[in-house]
Length: 136
Image (cartoon, rainbow, N blue to C red; front, side):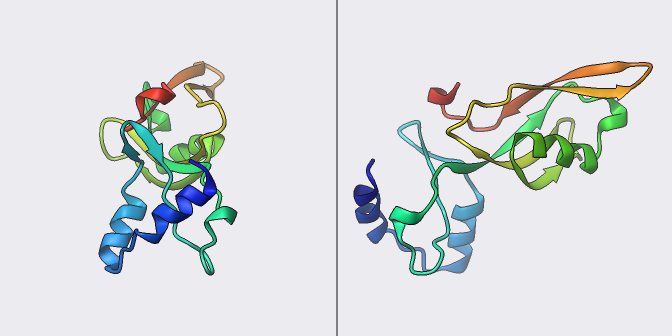
């Protein structure tokens, strides 16, 4: 959709309730018809034509993580290799990070991580939660 079309659509969107606005801004990624929608909080007067819709936050799962690497520090370090890290979750069985990625660039599918001199390196598969089918 061109910037003018987006601007017309945005004129009809209004989230007056602060809680609803926060839920929408932090709850993505959002899709419509299996197409990714980039939702941003307007800055200043909110000129749509000057906003960057190429960055979208995703929860990213790191699989096959060695026990010694299961930490917030490693999740942040690995996440920064993919994009800008917003949050991490290392409590469950899968280590995750909420990462804002540039959707115009190829997705990282695995990381090669050096653990120590004895074990060498490990391949860490990366999985994006709620990734639309067209991106796969």
